[in-house]
Image (cartoon, rainbow, N blue to C red):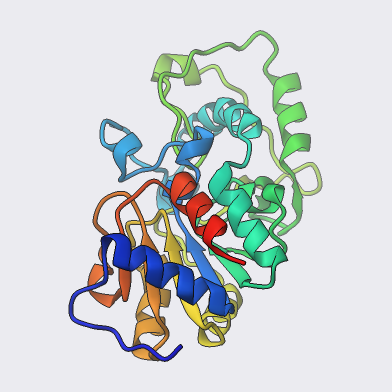
Length: 284
């Protein structure tokens, strides 16, 4: 199907029909954002579940800038990690995995760090911003499992108990300074270096090789399907711009407007789970 973008994206029933036709053609690359995981109980920053969120995400500069900032981060993340572990793939994740199984989705670029695409069965997933289930040492570069760090932190903080009020999409939670001041941080078991979750903090650069892999995926795509992202930040939006500039149809399903709506061939403002389940039912 050869299509060109109009000045006004298709919406409503016309958008649903166009979405089904383009997905049926195959070679679809999915670009997913935080909205993909809200139905799994993980809130986003900018959508409906993020509007009342007072806290700001950790920046790389703050994290490396001092031990107290790292103490606050690891105390909050220690509790948030438990919440992330309980999260399970939702209908949206399962539909994307099924579309890959049918040969219609060729890959997933996710801005999320929760691992739910893989848990649902997706095979080719590029984790643009890394993953919370890994830990990176800033000294020796060794990557280790988050579950191992969790065990070490539990052992180092017997009796430590705090009650988070909010959970953020990056596994962080809201705690008071009084609750974090007594938390003990552990260092790399191999070299004693500073440990950081293997995720891209705000202010940090995505590795060039990972970015190239994403561009290559999009360049070979028959269509780019954006799911649950407002495309506010350049990190994900650049792939939409790349697709649009190369005549690759851009399809967006998101609750609320996105920064790339003008680049879209079709646009659906709808919840992901029900929308993707309905899409699956229309396919042979």
